[in-house]
Image (cartoon, rainbow, N blue to C red; front, side, top):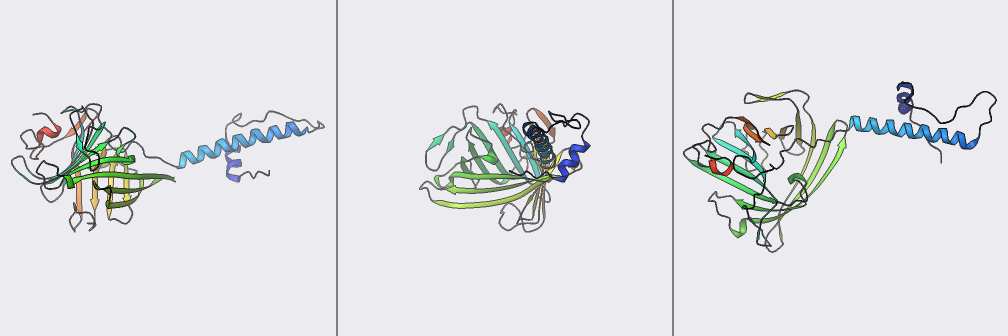
Length: 304
């Protein structure tokens, strides 16, 4: 088989330090060129070229794997991983929490009854202050041990849309998803399909999201806190940018008001982090929010 050697690879090999690329056989003037020795030299060169090609590919393709909040090792109050973002222009907040189930959190599934998941992810949208909660919407995801939330093949969801703290049968969903990630030059292309089934196994809702993840390339300051390593998620087809800090997760979301997202209004909206606690690292201030020490929702994530 004829092998074509790329000029770029040849250039890289020529620019490598002495001794980095070598062949097993050397010939002097008048020496017979034995086929086996010549082939061995070509095999060695091809191996070196492939190593260079892989090195170049790895250097120019980036996988962003540490920019989402993961589950805390403990599910005890005061130790759960959580971020709280404030919605600019009104008195509303978004709380995301993810923790290892201490064993006392159960979720009602659409088709299999009550389950006790390995991990629990909670998304909570709340409006109000320490004395009154005017609106609350909550989703509780039961996460299997097979993978993280973004890559879950399956999970169960309880939705408390009316905020009464109770989950009716019609608010339980079997959640199934597919997740495909492709490396690009200095970016990552992520596509996911989300499917929601009711107790009868009928598909009730679906969502498709394609986003490009890339490095911000500079520090990002949100509500007085500066984050050094940040990536940007650009949702294709949506006027939304999500900024994620390494090891913490989402710290800022900007949107132009996509009509398919009921949690955003029709005007540009900004959600910025005011508090996070991830693996014991804590920063921010919850004063005046429903999650403050005197707030109505203190016992969900924090201890009084």
